[in-house]
Length: 582
Ligand SMILES: [Zn+2]
Image 1 (cartoon, rainbow, N blue to C red):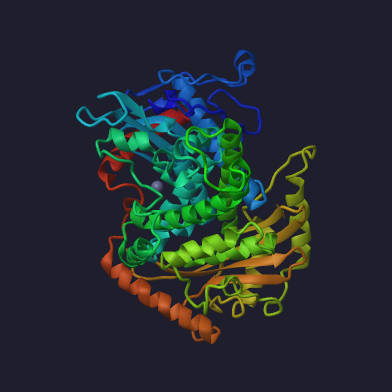
Image 2: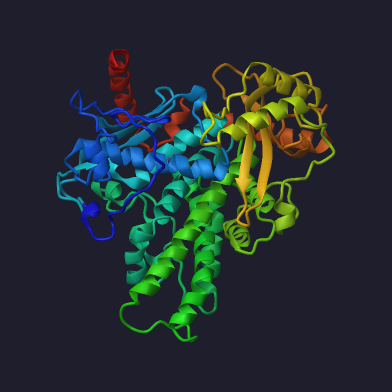
C-alpha cells in the first residue's frame, strides 16, 4: 500500500551484468518457488529486449515477476555497497550464488538460512482487526519491503565475512548481527534522495521526526497486528526544546541503563542502530546549516509555509550523501573487526581505526559524532583509557610482529588487482585462501603465535585472506592485506566452543600494522593478552550455563521461531526434489 503513495516509488540503479531468467546473475539467483502453493512462478527475463527498453517491469504488486525484480535489485544494491566499502569484489564461498526466494513460504517472517544458503521471504494476510495502513486481509509480501530484503541480505553477508558471529559468546554478538543488518537497511534506504524529499518538506528539514522514514519495515509491522513498526532507530524522548538539558540527562541515563540491561538481540541491536543514527543526524544537521543560512538570509529561522522545492532538493542531497557516508564507514569497519566474540565497543574502535586510516583528518565530523553517540549510550570499549580518538584506535603493532611472507603477498596483490580491470580475462577476486597460500599463512601465524596473541602449539585455522584497495575522498589509494586466524578450544560436546582469534592488517609490503585479537587464556601469551583471555573464558563459562545454545538461530530472528522451523522443514523437503531438477 505504501508503494503507491507519492515519494515511495524510486528507481534503484545497479551495475549491469548478464542475467539469465530468474533473475540469475554472477552472485545472486532468484528462485521463485512458492512453498505455500507448491509451484514455480515464471521467472522474469530482465535481459529480454522488450523489458530492457522499458528499464525493467513497472511496480505491480500482483505480478510475481516484479517481486523477483525487486528482490534482485535491492540485494544487488546491498552487494554493491559492500563492494565499495570493503574495497574488493565480494564473493560468496566458492564463488556460489546466494539464492533468494521471494515467496518461500506462508508466514510472517523472512530469514537467511545458512544451511540452505538462501534468503527465504514469507508472505501473509494482513490482520483483519488491526491492519494499519493495509487493507484487512490483504496479502503482504515481505519481499516487497526494501528494508526487509536489505536486512536479510546483510545477515548473509555478515555471516560470510564473520561466520563465528552467529555464536553468542557475549551479549553483543547476536545483537551486532541484528543491529548491523538494520543499519545497512536504514542507511541504504536513506541513500535515495527521492525518498527523503517528502519527509524533509513535511518535517521542515528536521529529519529525526520523520517517523515514517525511521521505522523499519513499517508495512510488515502493521500487518502482523502489532500496531506499530517493528523497531525504531530513535528514542521517543528526543526533544529540541529542552533548555535546561533536564530531559536530555534523563534520556542519557535511560540509554545507559538500556545497554547494561537489555539482552534480547533485536532490542540490544537497536541500541547500536540508535547510536549510529544519532551520529548521522548530528552530521546531517551540521552539513545543512549553510543551506539554511542561505535560505533564511542568515537568521536560521525557516519561514512559515512550504519550503522552496530547490532547498528541499539540496537538503535531500546532503542527507542522502551523509547516509551513504555512514553506510560506507560502517561496512568498512569490518576489516578491522576481530574474527570472533565482537562487542559494540570493538565495532566503535574498528570504525574509528578504519576511518582514520583512510581519512586522517576528520573534517566531516562524522567520527567525532560517532564517538559521542556511543558514549551517550554507555558503550565503552574494554581497555581504553579515554574516548579520545587516539585512544580508540586499535593499538599500532608496527615492528612487533615479523612481516608476512612477501612472495605470497606479491602474487595475491596481482591477482586481486585484476579484479578491478574491466578488460582482464577471467576477472576474479578470491577470498578463499587456497592450497599453498593457506598453508604458508598458517605456518607464518603458527611461528609468530605469541606476538599475534595466538596460543603457541594450538592449531591455527586461516579464515580468510584478501587484499583491500580503498580510495580516500581526496583520491589517495590505500592498499592493505587482511588475514584472519581462529583457534578453538574444545569444550563439552553440546557447549559452545571457546574460540580465540586475530585479525591481521598489514601494508602491501607485509608490515603488520594491527593485530586485532580476542585471545584464549594461556600463560604463554603476553600478560595483557592472557588477562583478556581469562576474562573472556570466565564470561563464556557464565554464559554457557545460562542460555540454550543448541540452536543459535533461535535467538537470531524473531521469537516466532517455531513457524520458521516449520517453514524450513517444508522447504528443505522440496529443496531436494527441486534443485536436482533445475
Ligand atoms: Zn535479523
